Length: 204
Image (cartoon, rainbow, N blue to C red):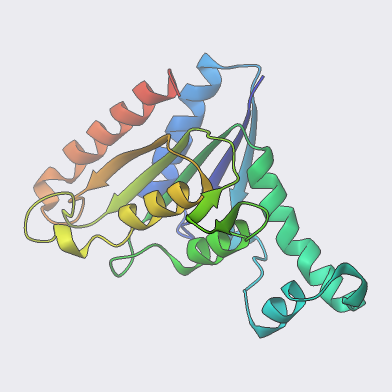
């Protein structure tokens, strides 16, 4: 049995992102009926923001922390521990303004914690997370995987770099891109993405 963490970063109901995520889950469960699926909707969850209070708390020892600071760090640790406990991770997110939605970047800050998921060494950083499959299901209106807009893709390279930082090399992406560029091709593009997530779910 595997524990699969599925993270959704899109507040729009019935969006392409949500529909692709649901198609993946359905196909995955059909092929892995004994696995456990945990869904985390970032827009229905209170995600701590890494602010000055958090940074100051991180600099203190356990004995120096106030009750408020302990509570705050416990909230962050919940997401860090949940990510670490997952055997597989699926992230479903669109591109907004050449990046991910802000709730996803806030979540990433909760799992990218020195001493827990990575550490600094004399020769550079070292990931502390056991290598696990991470899948990004990524929807974007334009085409950024190739062509003149490729240099403006700050989403996929960013998440891949975060995974490398944590020690995760098994990173996959399914793109549903150009979905808004040409209305005549929208349904065909989406149908292809549905096919890809369904097929990958069989082996993920």
